[in-house]
Length: 345
Length: 277
Image 1 (cartoon, chains in turn red, orange):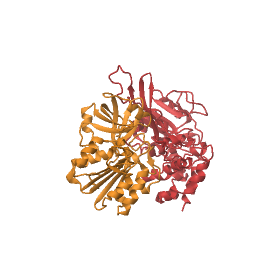
Image 2: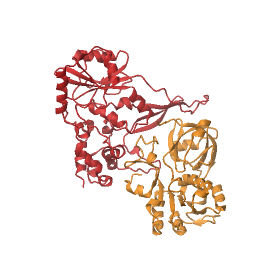
Image 3: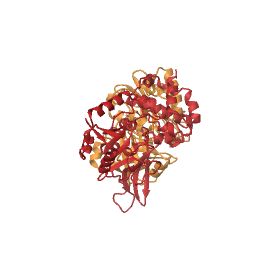
Image 4: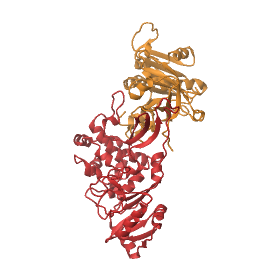
């Protein structure tokens, strides 16, 4: 593995160098909205003038927007009667150009791997995964809302990243982890890190909070129906307003809706993020709704992350980024839900 | 890799099935010969019917795999897509994506056994597919009992076929309507009552039950009374679906995805699930 040391200027030059002929994205600075039409809210295309500095903690919106963009066009068609292809569904040309995401945190990098479990056979996700390069920033400190260590990650984690950049005493140490990362770093002349710097980084990694899911793993062995019937859902469901903020900001919420959209006889079938917090999500045409109550929907989200997903794929569907904790308007905290669940007999 | 692209098909025939006009059977033929040949389904599976500009809906496949060259879907007019479908004409193009789901265990648990089919209302569609398949492979199965009920004689689906099947001596057919009707000289009574009267033996048998939840609820006690167990009973669940491939999560019942793990489950499996269907 190659390890380089960069100054702030060298880092900025490297990233701006990449952006000459590729799409490079970074978390938007401050509260500023993205300035490019192809960019997701909370992210912006790297421009020549902005030095790359990141506030602590994960970006406002997660990296899923690049792998699982909304809307994603699944098919296109025409409804014009004169066209012999009327009503014929066609697959659109898939984007293949590389996109480089700079500044995602280790939690988001892990979310990509977790989402890849249900999307293993999904053609759109796989194409996006193949064209995305992830240049992550490790965390020097954890925010009050962070709990990546409890979910099997770590603030200094590198899992899922192509290049991991760590800030050390005013300069940056870049660990190149994959062949794709090597290609990118080979384009510019970089200074290899000193052994002392590499050792210091290893030491810091050793002393940072380590992945520890022993406590939470107990949940996997608990009876599903006992957890499902636990009294805590009633209380939780009463405060939850089903706004869906947690699901949209969650890097590991991945459910989607499919809709048809027609403009002047040209149509497309698109998919976009949905939320199990909404009554329409499970509503039958007959009017019957298996999760018609607010409490049932709140329960479904947490049970999916902590019980249903692990039953199918063996891992919790949560990376501990804490966005849901930050953004919940009624202060629901998944960490409290987890400890309440662990206390269920 | 999953393909979300529907196969183009043409509507070859439309048959109004019921007196209220709300149920129509659509006979669909593939536009592409290679796709027609590649299509393989088992009774109990479903497919996504796709209407450009409207959307997709999951519908049980009403035709048996032994009826080659076309697919049948009997569709109740209920929502946006089904209403648009009911307004379509012969020769028009639509799409089919599938087959999806697991289907009935025709080659495993059902093989060599007596088969009891119990259907209520328009849930009979995939059971029609099953019965035709069983009759085509008659020597592979034991006694076949088919119990089917609708509200009125005019609400029975596949009426011509019911008459044909009644003439056969290798299928024990019991067709019932909820109450007396002019011109009806067949059975009268709800499906659970008739199932209790027919009292099919549970010995070396498998039951496939499809119908409204209330019918299933009341059909089980008379069967249990004569010794049927949950392992012998197969049910078909339905939930709102989008992808049909086990990705989008819409149809989840606890950790189970109806589209991929089902729609066919044994009653033992269903009992273990949270009641979210």
